Length: 82
Image (cartoon, rainbow, N blue to C red; front, side, top):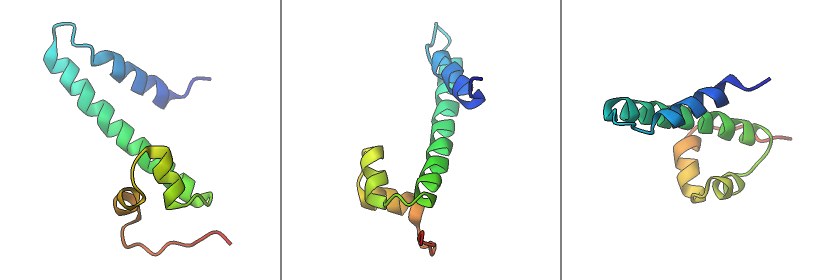
């Protein structure tokens, strides 16, 4: 079974080829970016729940620890795995 989100993102990525229709391509690009951001947030929450550190997540995302913590950590009090 193919993940519907992967199919959706693949379809959006293909739709960014403008084929002369820049409006459709730019709309697809905006929707693809939103979906990628949403998926990133889900995966970061899942990674934290499984005990990955901010530094590990940052390395996987190719950003600094401070950047990923600022974007996803905020000032929320987190429960660390026991």
